[in-house]
Image (cartoon, rainbow, N blue to C red; front, side, top):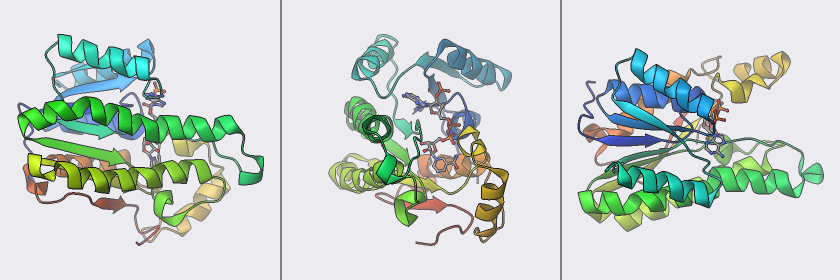
Length: 249
Ligand code: NAP
């Protein structure tokens, strides 16, 4: 499939590493003008280097999605530069795993703030521009554990399940404006996030996956590019599972 995203500005949160970096690269290769974000100046530099090396029309900026002031500052910068994202990929996310009996308040709150409240904040800031353009693609990166559950991740799976409810309700609100809202639920993907798992845990998880392996970041990015494209114009409120058969909803 030849995906054409020319003349479209795409915002990808958490584009410095892992899945977000692959999404930013793929959307850029499809012709979108990409704004990638990171939490540090080093992350911003990394994104800019990737864009330059791949001839991608794009910029990078610091954004902490867990902080309303940072979100306000970031969108003020975009407005000053006359940039209106009409493709939004809410990708930034963290884990703070612990068993429920031991889970601390900050482990719960940090994950809800970074993975769920952030989606509300960033999407709200983008929505007016999309309504004005009468076009929008909002793609939320949730997780297989939102559907399957996972011991040690009540915080993370609650936030990720919240993203799915958010996706469905917003899809109903804005469909008449030409805006689609979907979620992508990755299974186990090779990134920094999963590198924390022990070798033994990784082997056992691979065995539970129908395809017998972890996924690659590009496999998530390609699904996001499809949802951003004109070919996906009639898909909204949906959660696309990209998990190699780890969990079949
Ligand atoms: P990762 O390699 O750990 O990268 C996380 C990204 O999020 C980084 O770019 C990081 O920026 C950014 N980020 C973290 N906190 C942030 C904040 N407060 N504000 C803005 N950006 C922030 O993670 P990943 O594996 O690529 O995961 C990406 C998304 O996919 C997450 O939402 C994750 O929950 C989801 N997911 C991943 C897997 C998997 O197996 N890897 C499976 C299911 C779902 P910095 O570089 O600046 O820290």
